[in-house]
Length: 531
Image (cartoon, rainbow, N blue to C red; front, side):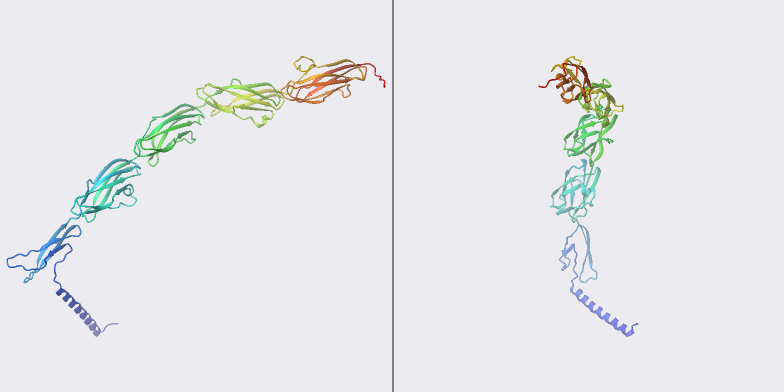
């Protein structure tokens, strides 16, 4: 809705009254104020007075700045009777604390990575007031914040005094650095700066081996070379050794890694066990963890060879062998080369062991350079007859076909000997028993001595050929141990007046049978008188 003219007049009248009231308050305050000069940095005293004719009046102006910098103010002198005031321009330069480093840049040169280096710098108060200082913190995570520390990083230096600041540098980052640090001088006009320049380098070390040459080595044998790593700096040095491309692990360093004390040394043994018939041309690399890989490379060389072994003959003949009895024979294997060789006698297959089992001692081993080794073979025949079995001898690492040795034997069963006298197995006697004329109807006995002349037990069976024979034996079955002698009794009982012939059969299990002729003639009377 629109206001009426009467309403507008009422509003304007109210505002006029409010303004007049506020103006009267200001006028009263202005009349009460002497309008003296006031300023935070300048003070004049006295602020009023009287100057006699042709006289002077001294006013003292004090400059008391609260912070450094240039200051300027204008004071006005009000003279009674004059319409215009006299201006007085006041100027001053507030000089704050002054502190500077004795040198603002420090070239530290090469410093070792991970080493703690300390430097002393001096902050000098060259002003006329005490100087409060503090380090402006570098950006968090920056190299300046991580690698450098200052003690103290804040403080107050009295007038004319010097503050020593200890700077600690420890860096894990290789390369050059140029870091600037700003120090605030509280209430000073300008800050002071301190620069550090240098280069972080890896540890200095040397190896006393120009190269590592194993020369000609035998396949599968252990060879070693020694060398020493010297730490030439004042910090501990970590190291790690490796042979690039050694997938089979044929080279081994003992130790392969570790830490060498300042200016210390570490002896290292490099071991080679070749598993490849080849020439090695590679390097042994020295890594320094946290610094770099392959900081030093030692040339490495070797030539792995496999010599040829020889046997004096292709057959190892055991000759006649009793079944299931152990026999041994030796054969000499020779190595005519200048490097040793390893061999393996391949195991016998299970199928052929049912015919004849053989074993070799040693079943594996080595033959010295230009040396020889006796192999002892043991056989136990399980079947009768001729035996020919192959034995395979492999030279470890050789690409040539393995050596083949034929094991030959003639397996046989037990052998018996016969004699007419005891303990006389070697007598020459063609076994035959003759009784000649014997009275009928009476027993007449003869003894034949049977000896087991073999190295194994002999199971024998004795019997006469004709089941209705006048001859009979006392023991039909008997086991004779090796070398054992047994008295076999054969008895004849003639019941006819005639010549009677038969055969005594001595059968040997797994051996040859023996046949002994028997002859007797019955005499006398077949009539007997009962008492």
